[in-house]
Image 1 (cartoon, rainbow, N blue to C red):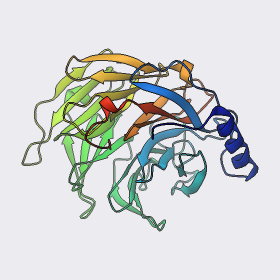
Image 2: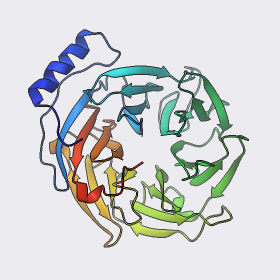
Image 3: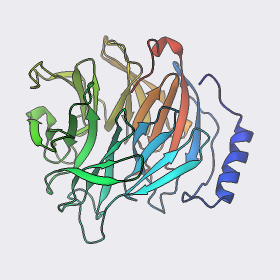
Image 4: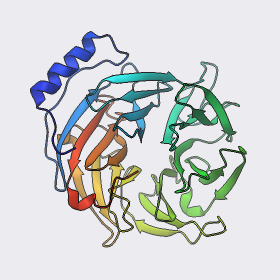
Length: 335
């Protein structure tokens, strides 16, 4: 995407959506703020309601640019088009009798990833036998493919580059698990001390890039790189970045091995651009751009998506899109 509609057109479109009675409460749209190069033209395309527990947590992208979002407090997945319209709402199998080990909610819908066939894989924290990885087919069929420890908090999920295995972070147990979506086998891939919590949330966001796992540790404010060896085991863990206060999930700006990384700093209501070569982070989106506790980011071509959950501000949860300069998106689209 090289350009976006005007603010007036966006307001007209959102008014039309609200009139159609969709499941989301659409409040307002804020025009572009103070984005910093290489990100420009940020604007909210869908406004959610914190009062109605519409807290967008994680993003998976469809081939046409549609965004699948997990709404953590609502135990739902919603499919949002680039025009801001909600195309589909998918409830997940939660219950008022359950209790996720993290927070005060009975259940939480967390990490989300899509495979090349169009199946979605969602993490559900319920504190009972339903806790784990759920597969949702394009036809809407839901199957639990892996049960995860009820005492933990499954948070982030990613496929390896061949889509053979899923990797799942647990922010309470301080582990990364490996899940085989065919056999449903689950094993602990790493429980290194660098993944552990120091009080609230340990290992959190996760992406696979150029033969390695990149994970965040929220409590420690760190970005870690973990090589995936040829035999499937993990190599030595390297700390790429530190001092990243409130770090949540990440997104690579392109498939290039040297690609920069967008880092969602949840508690700071900020997104930084992290340069792995210099190991420096530069703010590119802030509160002035309408961020409200961003929990995740995604990139498709020259379009950046950021989901703000409003967990601490308790207001203004939204989905924002922005333009990314082509110098950061060469060689195709990011995952």
